[in-house]
Amino acid sequence: MKSFPNPHSVTELLDDEVFQRWMKERRREDRWFWEEWLQVYPEKRDLYEQAVAAFLLIEGKEDNLTDDEVALKADQILASIPDESLDNIKPLLGWTWVRWVAAAIVIGLATWYQFLPKPQEVTLTSRSEEKALEEGKWTLVNNTSQQPMVVLLPDNSSVVLSQGSSVRFRKVISKTKREVFLQGEGFFEVAKDAQKPFFVYTNSLTTKVLGTSFQVRSFEGETVALVKVKSGKVAVTSVAAPNKPTYLIEHQELSIVTKTNEVIQKTSDNVAENPAAIVNQQFTYEFAPVSEIFSQLQEAYHLPIQYDHEKLRSCTFTGQLNDVPFLEKIRLICLTIEATYEVVDDKVTIHSQGCN
Amino acid sequence: MTSSVQDHVLWKSYREGDKQALGMIVERYYRTLRRYGLKFMIDEAAVEDCIQDLFLQLWQNRLQINDTCSVKHYLLKSLRSHIIQFLRIEKHFTHQEPDWDTALPKEIDVETLLIQEEVALFQINELKRQLDTLPAREREALYLKYYENLSVAEIAETMNVNRQSVSNFLQKALTKLRSRWLVAPLYWLICLFL
Image 1 (cartoon, rainbow over the protein chains, first blue to last red):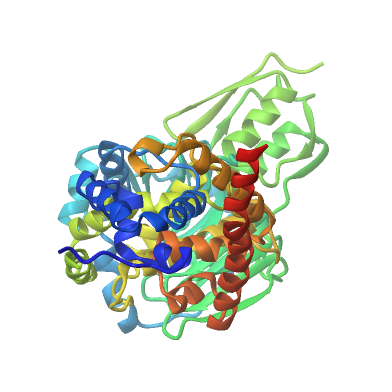
Image 2 (image 1 turned 180 degrees about the vertical axis):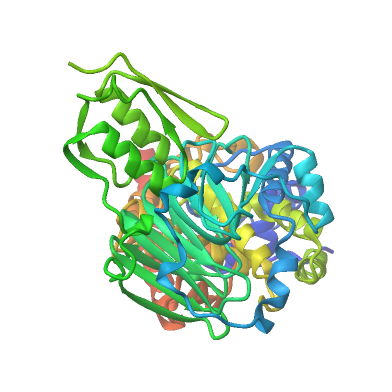
């Protein structure tokens, strides 16, 4: 004789694991079991029906993913996981320390333009990462030059990458999110796209935004990792406490001491310290000559902008370009002065018929 | 309980750096997580993003992550905190309770479930009316208890409240539902006679 559950209340039946499995999986052999059960306890039919009704309600709307769909999702998740992170995490505790210095981004030496670095595809230590790069899914840009450089991301966001820093990103943007892996320091201006949050991963912290501008600094060998917000709002989580985000708004910054995971949040006040750093610069204009704007942009992003000085002589621009990425700034200016632009060989060329 | 043994093994391998083990955990719990996530009334893409974030962080933090007695409970708990985080950022959601979906299954297979259609529909409608009056957190506690089969302690940890509160949520919810269970058959009888 089989042992049948003999519940005295609806909740007792709901609590029964055999009943739960029957309701969730609806196996044929379980159906036979409950058919028999109903014959053994005909007086409990009400109770059974009430439990079924309650279960269906608690379960709610069905969700029909096929096994193939689930397998696909699992593949996508695995593909999004960076291969090299193990190599980066391990030595975290043993690093030596240097304090964060606001003057780290050196911007503004006009004479440096002609020595502009080209983005370099570097050789990598990790074999698996090499494989991922070989497969052509990721782009890696390493700034080995002596000055910051601008990196244009596929979603039209831009990063001003400091010396000795690198970023890695997907060549083709995923459908759900934008992800950049950063080592070192970068100033990000993120194209707005509420449907695809933008993530910056580093060894010690993760920054998530929808569209804004901010600076992230997390060098190997430095004690403090830093996020500094220029505009908008971002969520920062430390790798050590992934479930405790800190929210930062304009002019706020957060540093994490990597050894102790101590989090320090404060209002940024570095404008005085380093007015040239892009994170501190304002891009607000009132009838400003376009040529002046272009030279500010050239300096800030370390990307040459070529145009016909004569033709643009009488062109001006009014508006603010603070929280938009580099190319969006160019695009908005061009829109105003009825010009077009193209990016070829690490320089921007403006085509204009002039303004009257 | 073969599945919990295997979970345990997978969890250990993943923490030792086996990416395929994490992949198997993803496959095993994707439906569970997605179903739970969708209850918070946010769109599918957002739920899937939260799930992806969850596993990405699990991988990044695997050296700090401890052993767990229940992988499912650990994942449900983590997903909830990712969703709360998402609601805070994107929906400017501050302190109020997250919402909880009570939409019904589209079709109820009465034949398979061994119930009589009229009775079932009547029962479900009666109960639905009651369920809709419950606060979201009571509905969530019911779900975690009777659908996911979590213990009171696990529910407390998942929902980030103390055990006593969970017992209270369940108690209140069941009292309301019970009043229907008693009344329903009577209604049915009355309907028959009218």
